[in-house]
Image 1 (cartoon, helix red, strand yellow):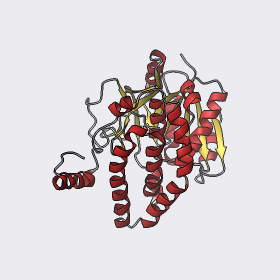
Image 2 (image 1 turned 60 degrees about the vertical axis):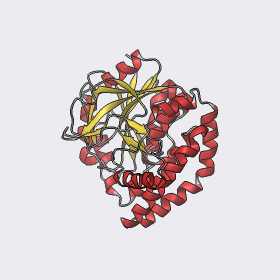
Image 3 (image 1 turned 60 degrees about the horizontal axis):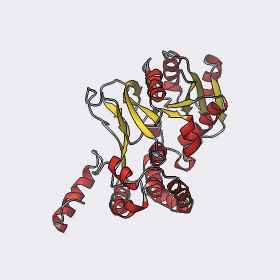
Image 4 (image 1 turned 135 degrees about the vertical axis):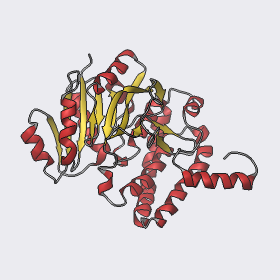
Length: 338
């Protein structure tokens, strides 16, 4: 069995941290656990040192965000000799077989760089994610979110991307494509790294027997306007870095409509400052992202047509307002689908 480390980023998660760690310590196979303490002020660090002195810590004095935070944990795991590194949210609980199911997938499939889980709500009544997908509108979405838990996603399959909240990454793949983009801070950094993995020729696998239970929104819900700011900031970077040149225009037209639709919707929700700030920061960092794009695309090992074949050619299921706008455009243009 390959050496595996689970990295848990923690920021003020004391209410759920013990359940999270206890579920990982009860896994059916031996694993290493690293907690990245991301500048908590709620007593998390004191709890970890008192109750879990045997767990390795990476301590930061401030909140570096999910991306930079887990990078520090991944780097530590690689230094320790791990072949696989799993990421796990501090507000989630893992089934006893969670790690073993993911490890078995990577052990038996050399071409798979990332294996992801069935992630449900904490009460196991609704799905949170069964893998992430990217659309020809430049919008990612978690498959199955909000659906009742059932057997509809019980088949092993290759998917587009993996949720950073409960997935396993092959270190040899990370050595080739790099770690998470720290500028994302949080939101869509997991889709970004999955997109880079796909471009580099790696597969992403969904393992339905790897099950975890997530308190959805327990962290991001603590900060007003957080989701709006991160969405406005990160979505353009995801598009500019990864979409092959052949499809930049066709995706870009749709993406522009969706992006500015979200922008004006944010104004209606009295989150103008978060929206403007996200747009501004996204533009400031755009030159850097275009440099990164050149590096990513120059190392691409699959055809643009392959990427086009694995993205979703529709809006995300929950994009109700955009579907209404699209229907109106169809009627006006008389040209069929947009």
